[in-house]
Image 1: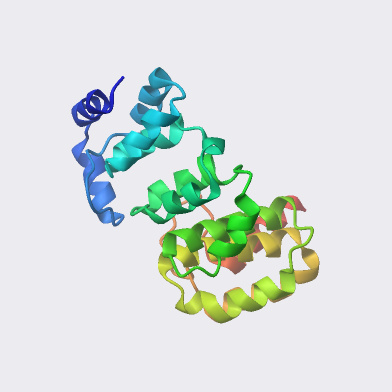
Image 2: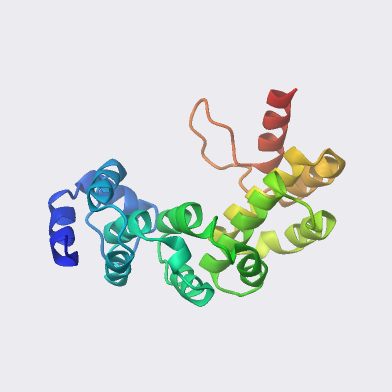
Amino acid sequence: MKTKEILTQLKALGDEKVCKHYKKAGATGKYFGVKLGEIRKLAKKIKTNHGLALELWATENIDARFVAILVMTPKSLSADELDELVRSVNFVRVADWVNSYVVKDHPDAESLREMWMDCGDPMAERAGWNLTSIRARKDSKGLNLPGLLKRIEAEMGDAPEDVQWTMNFALVEIGINHPKHRKRALAIGEKLGIFRDYPTSKGCTSPFAPTWINAMVERQD
């Protein structure tokens, strides 16, 4: 399949309800509003094709970028190329797919994590803190957890909302997985109050850090 053909197919799959949802979520630029299930079906037909993925990414169309993420070969990106890709994201839903499917297992993820956390670019910082939350949950060896908590306390209140989201993830993962630092993590969450009043669907756990930490710890017990 060629890029033009894929864009034609995506346009035909566009859904007005999805478009409205994306607009409400802050999407800007070009998109057809294709359901993610349809995105996955199309990507499965295309299979892995890194060159095509880069062409689709370059269109800046949100739906095409979702497809690109699923058909690219992350390890074919150099650290500089991945850095550029992350910074070019303009919609948080795309950012989260990039973080989950491309960034997380990239061989340069750790060096980029450290750079991104202080880079001043919201999407890159979001990626950096997302990687930090993963480290706090899975492999915290070498992480300065007290230092991270100190940074979160000092910086999260003034951080852009897109960055706050994954900083909050890091705070939560430290609180859940490191009992020694749980009391401190809970206190920081209470002090900052970020996401305290976040609308949460029935049956779901609030992203407010103290609520989230306590709920997960109770499940572990």
